[in-house]
Length: 310
Image (cartoon, rainbow, N blue to C red; front, side, top):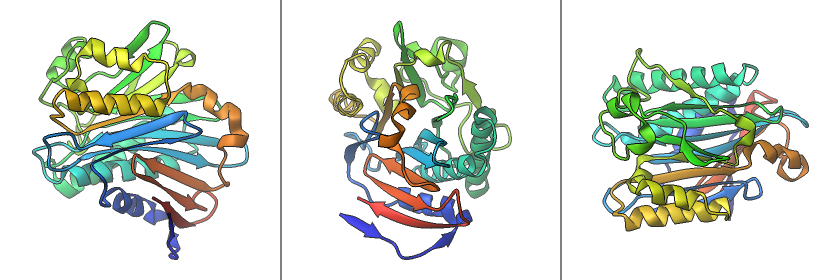
């Protein structure tokens, strides 16, 4: 099923359109893959919550015939605060539009700027009474890679010695102990929407080129016991199947919160198959667990023509 919208809008409307799309009605849960199965993501409402306030997306941007970059980002709207789902959608929309706008910046400063822009937008709207976590990465066809984290969603990677958490939870426990052993730490010190004091931190990996698998998770997945969590993610199967298993186990463990996950296998090798993964120049392809949308002409022109696929 394909729906083509006839409207053509200026590039500055990209953020608003992404936010509206992310706030569309969705199913209770879904799994989706992209880039020939190298990347997959899943999101599920769980067994308890009345609403899924998680948002997880992967974006492919084709800058030229030889240059492109990919962004993965997961946001968890903060339960108990105002409009958690909208905070997550706005955070992602602003973050992505900032990354695309500032595509000539080095990717580390670009990630920090994008988080600061998202924080400003959420804080302006909710004045500190609404917010979201944010875990994200960028990697590009030149082999550059960086990741960033704010809040208690997490970034894991599988290197030579198995699965390890490389982000630090922005909680009292996470900042003062090994956060990988803390499953349900509470009391966020940092989140998107906290205001002027936000201090986004780039995530450091010891050997970037040895990353076999990169994982973003919301805290619904952290109810899974640590050894079981790592056992699942160490299995040799597709990214989509791993996402499905993580959702299933989180629900078997009670499904106390929304659970979202993004898995990228062999992230630094994806661009080796450019003929298979390339999209038209100037196109932004945005995929979440429930569908995808293409924005055509975003990087080449000051207009965009969205094409939505369910």
